[in-house]
Image (cartoon, rainbow, N blue to C red):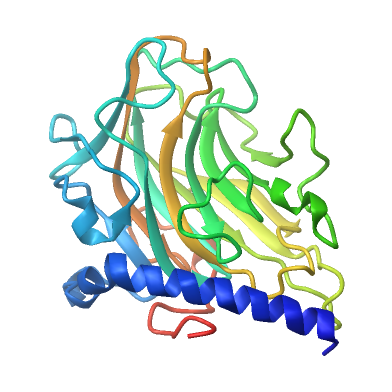
Length: 309
C-alpha cells in the first residue's frame, strides 16, 4: 500500500473513532437495554414514534417532537407541521441518530401527506431524510459533506439522491457531478408520480457504496441505489459511484430526519407524518418486504465492532 493511501486510511479511522465515541455516549445505554424481541438480524436501529422521548433512544441534535395518535398506523407517529411561510416544521425539530458504520444502509418507513399537500415547484426541494458517513462529524451539515444521500419526494415522485460538494478540493475530486449554483448532485427518481393521496405509504431505500479498484486509485461503478414504494421496486441502479479513492474506508454511520422547504418554497400550511422507521444493513423483516433487498447489505451487522475501534 502506498503512503498516500495509508495516510487517507489513518485519517478516516481517526474520524470513525470520534463518531464511535459519540455513539457510545448518546445511544450506548439504550442499545444495551433494548428488548431482544424487537431486534432482527441486520437492524441498526428502529423507531416507532410512540412517545416523544426520542433522546432516550439515541436521537440527538433535536429538542421537540410532536407525537400524535390521531391517524397513526399503530400507537403513535411523528407529525411535521409547517406554518405559513416557514422553512422548518413547528413543534417537531430535525434530529439525528448514529449507528454502527456499514457500507450498506436500508431504510424503511411509512409516510402520509396531508390532503392539501403541495410541492415546491423546484427540482431541489423539499428535503426529508438523509444518511451521512464516517468522513464527517456527528454535527456536520448535510448540504456540504463528503457524501450525503437523500430519501425524499419531489413533485410526487420518490427521489433518491447524492451530493459530495465538500470534495471539490479533494485529490480525486467530485463524484456527484459538477457544482452549479453552489451545489452538485445526482438524482434517481421514480418514473411515475407515487405520492398522490393522503394514505399511508411504505417507502424503502437501499444505498450501497461502490468498491475501489485493487490499487485503491479509482472507483468502480458498482454502487447500488434502489427504492421501493409500497413494496414495488421503482428505482433500480447498480452502476453508481458514491465514493472516490480518497475515502477507501468510508462507511454510512448517521441518519438525519430533517424535513425542510427552502425559503419561499412552501406553497401553504401543510403536514406530513412518519411512522415505524427502521434502519438496517439489509431488509430486516417481512412487513411489505422487498425480496430484492434481502441481501442488500451483508457487511457490518450490528454485532460487528466498528472499524478502528
